[in-house]
Image 1 (cartoon, rainbow, N blue to C red):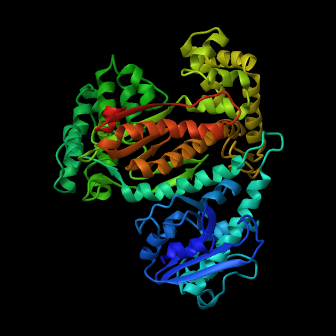
Image 2: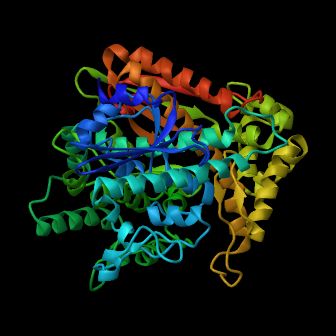
Image 3: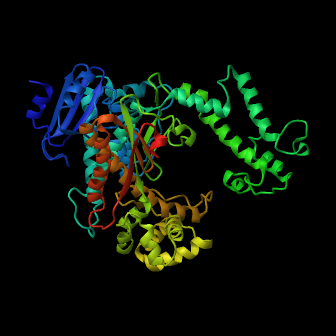
Length: 578
């Protein structure tokens, strides 16, 4: 009998939560005989010795929901295992408690309503080494913060038991978030959000492990065309920088650039002074402020072109390839499943890849890229979370700005400005007039946004539609940011945060469906998913992206007429799929 079959015979299956801990000499499991939601029922423990990678692959056959402290430390992805379902204690803790730390000490402290302890620094002292699981104050001991739980299978089993305690507490807290005024859901929305956030945390580890396929030769062609050949050494690189600078400075009159040393184009104040000398006295040198002058001023046009090249040279240059692109042609960076209001973010430039390089994101032989992005997602989310039936009716259309324009008696561009002004709190100029029309036409949506803004101004914590705590409480003596900025942040966070929750739920549904289709999710970009799939599975993957969105919206926006739409494209490169 296989290990999975033996445990299935012990009742492990059908989504039962099971705490999992891996150590070098085996795995430890902990679960409850009851429904898994409380501490009721006797604890079941298994300490299984062996190669953890082999054991994890055997356990992958079980249809359970694995509970772990964090997907990054669980070891499943490194073992080549892609679990169907999980409960990530760190991800759910961020959701429930609104803190930014992912370490077990912070998760444990939040569970017990304690302030997170400082992270251990330096070498441990003898007392820390000899410590047990918990300190006298109830905090996780420094010894266990440093990994003392991994010494033996027995200590790993104790670590799994603590994980179960945190899981049970998180379940209870999520149950308490149910709005008694809302239509009942089974499972509750907060629980569904916790499942999706956990899947997103696992997906973040998978994205980092799998990487984004790039054509290194194509990247090199772009770089050579913009910043020149790969420099031999730092002296060569400095000479290339001077050459690029000289192209810009030649566009300015000699008297504007005369002096002991040429103006430093990387110094905003010196650039501003340089522009003053040619008659452009601007408050700052931001690109959006310079762009209106590019058509009539060759120096400004040259400066803007230089900035694009400089960004490539400093952020996406030759050293960027060396640091982040592996021998297999995959671009890799660290991923976070929830930053700020809850969006997924990435390192290594993955979330800000310039348009010039998107053509170098290329499917491997025998594969294609399938891209989909959510259309007008934040306005549609606003319609759902605010419960504004008139706005939801507009969001039932493929282009929701058209019915909004009809309702406001304006053209479509003005309607779009009005909706965006509502979400971002812009009140001046044409946006202010459009916002007043929005207030008359969609009062419930605007009331929802104003309530969030008021909470931000007063420093009152909020929760998103899916239950994420947005911490707004602050020290009254902290006057670094004006009250209005806190209000604008809160006004947008309740929409942006909910949109991030919807996106991750969609991504989790797509991830599950890819088991049958094949391929990988290789990029999550705000409201965009990029899949890498075998050519023969392209149409199935495209259909999956649409059906997964419909399935997600059915429970996420249950009872609302609002629809969520996506455009899907299949191509060999990311640029061609845009």
